[in-house]
Image (cartoon, rainbow, N blue to C red; front, side, top):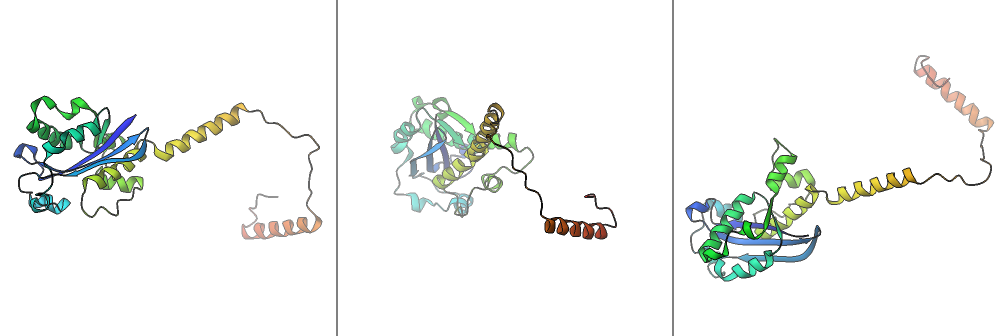
Length: 231
């Protein structure tokens, strides 16, 4: 199965207020293994970036003014996402922005969630850990995923971190270990014990060993007020 872990950064929080995507990061998984292939683009949003958003990702219109517009990379993006399941944390946010960008380019492109299946890791985490914090940072701490380089949000970095979190949440190495343990138990249960030929050798304690044992029992009995259970 081919999966794409996807993240975006935007000019602001509300797509309904005309905010735009300014960064897209995607990481490819095939059969739950990272392939090393990724898609990453900065985009010129053609509008100012909210101060609150700049504080999160550090991207300003001045930094992005020479980057391509979404319409210039849309077909490259759709080709990369084709026939994949998208893994997104808080998918409603990213999907909403992607659909708005697609509709600006051409109405016949259709919404992204009609092109690809979408798995929301935030909803998955809420089901697995009800009543707990399920932000990406909280999940990193819970599953032991290194996010020490995440001083500012970045779409590609966050996609790579989310890939590690997703694999840990849905099994990862622990699932492999459990499977191997189950296979070992099954093998032990179905394989009869074969006793090697020969007479079983019995080794008796020597006299000095018996004497040392009795002395230890004396000390235990004294320390326990006569409650030693070994005699």
